[in-house]
Image 1 (cartoon, helix red, strand yellow):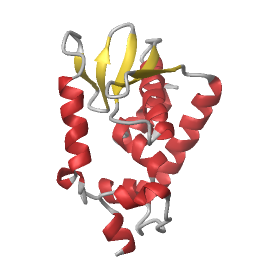
Image 2 (cartoon, rainbow, N blue to C red; image 1 turned 30 degrees about the vertical axis):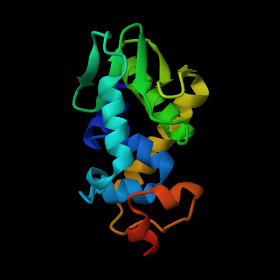
Image 3 (cartoon, helix red, strand yellow; image 1 turned 90 degrees about the vertical axis):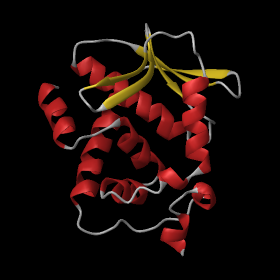
Image 4 (tube, rainbow, N blue to C red; image 1 turned 135 degrees about the horizontal axis):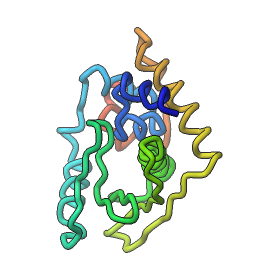
Length: 170
């Protein structure tokens, strides 16, 4: 697993990149090349404000490890604050990636997705199935990031709210 951690570092594989992979490989490729349109997104701004203002009593907030993972809240659980459940798979895999990375450092934790606006939470456990899915995703992410051409646009339900929508479908 340590060789795999080195591969994660060489890709500079952050949680955001893992999340973007599960949302849209095209978004990942564009983001990796510095075409970040997120700063113009009202939804992203609202998400940042929500992350800042939710759970103010938690002491260990916004913990960054090895410049790769940035955990919203860290205590006995790895906690990630999300605006909505819309990108459930991507959010779950982002937390799974954090758990995977921590396991590689010898730290075992479970995770939870927090949805403060909905007053809901969802547990995330790093299973062997998830480990395999993360490792496969890392291989695919490596291919996407090394590719010289932009992945093909695929229209999905959430494309209408994506900041890259106009770029992809013009």
